[in-house]
Length: 115
Length: 114
Image (cartoon, rainbow over all chains, first blue to last red; front, top):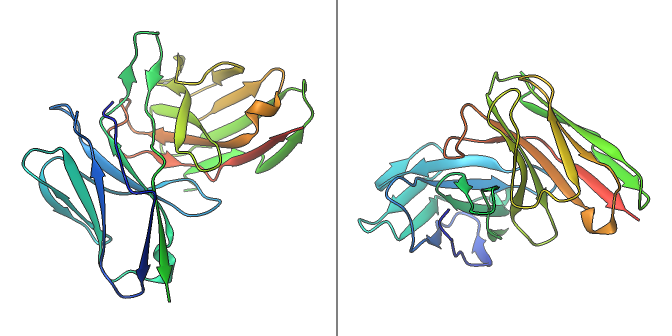
C-alpha cells in the first residue's frame, strides 16, 4: 500500500474552488487513487476514484499527472456542508510479511469552509 | 436499503469486560472490514473478511476476535476490554475484496473503556 502525504488542514471561503493534493511517490502500477469524505460522527463516504488523467463526477474532479506520484481532489464552489475530513487512499489491501493485511487511511485533510 | 448498520452506537465498558460489536450489510457484498479510528488519526484495519467463512488479520488485531456469521453479518468481539481500545469502530463492506473498489461504511460505534 502506497504511503500518502496530505496537508493536515485547509481553510476556504464559501463559493471558492478547493484543491487538495495528495502525494504518493511509491504508487504501484496497478494502484487506483480513491478519495473519501468524512463528516464528524459519521463513517467515511466515497467521493471519487481514478487511475490517470482526469475523472469528474457530480461532486468533484480528480486530477492525476502522467507520473501518478500525486493527485489533486478539486471541489468546485464549496459550501459550509463541505466542511469535513478528506482522505486519499492509494492502492488496495496489502499483505504484509507478518501475515496480516494493511489498508490504512492516512490522517486526512481537515477542510473548514468559512462563511 | 439501509446499507451498513452497526450496533450499538455508543458503549461504555469497564476494564476487563467483554462485548460484541455487531455489523450488518444489505448490499449482498462479499467483503467486510472492521476499522478503528482514534482521535486525529485515520482509520486502521483490525480485521478483514473476503467472503463468508473467511477472516484475516489486519494491521491492529490484538485484543479482538471476529466472526463472519453469514454473508450479511460481521461481528467484532472484545474479550477483555482495555482503556487502549477506547476508539470509534467502523464496519465497512465492498462488493469484492482487495480494497480498491468502493467501500461503504457504517455510522460507527463509539466505545469508551474506563
